[in-house]
Length: 291
Image 1 (cartoon, one colour):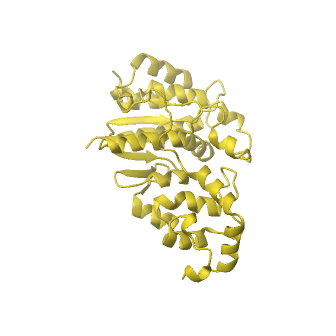
Image 2: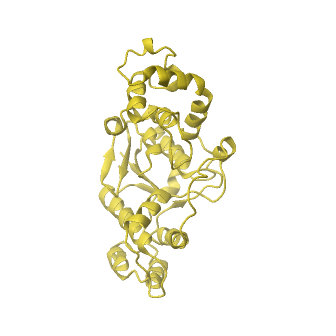
Image 3: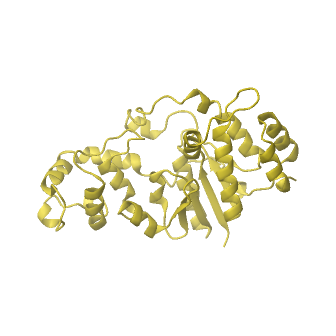
């Protein structure tokens, strides 16, 4: 069965930036995050040997979530200058490896990944989503797994339940109740990971949770207060769930699975870029791939 790997490039760029030392070129340009992301990309390509592969980044600009909730991601601090300086070189390095890179205007990377994963499954293609973003766990199903190359954690459906206490389909509801600080929505007061997992493990979705705790038949701390909060702030919970739900039918233009085949490293471009960045080891490691 053919395979597809979809990489959440923005997620790994941030993780690598904070995990790797402050490495620089001879001219003083930062390269630590570049090296970290490339190492993870090469690892997943070598380990999984996918038939189709793409690295997906957020495009600049707003999406429908910003229109629904102006505070969406507004709490994030400004991007450090040394991180911003590595975005364009990373894009260039990804392309220089011959790896398809996707950025769709007006569509978040997670929604691009969700749409491509759904299309792949419809064609019988096994899909791996490479990310550390918990939002993407909702996409896991038979034939779709999630892997964090930084920690080597791989999640199938049972793995998502073990990690979060709820099935993949309940991840948006779970995030709506507990909140997502990285995306800037707070969740509902009093609801924590344990209470949300316990209730959703039984009822699956917020709109199926009975208003009376007598119908819960669960040993949940402060259940009456949680039920009252959900009743009072149901509209907020519904909004947060919409923000957390990834789209699987996004308009992604001409991006097709046939465009995601890796066709080898273009030698001249790759060598020149590695020399510019001082990536001698990278150049030698990938030399065997070059056309």
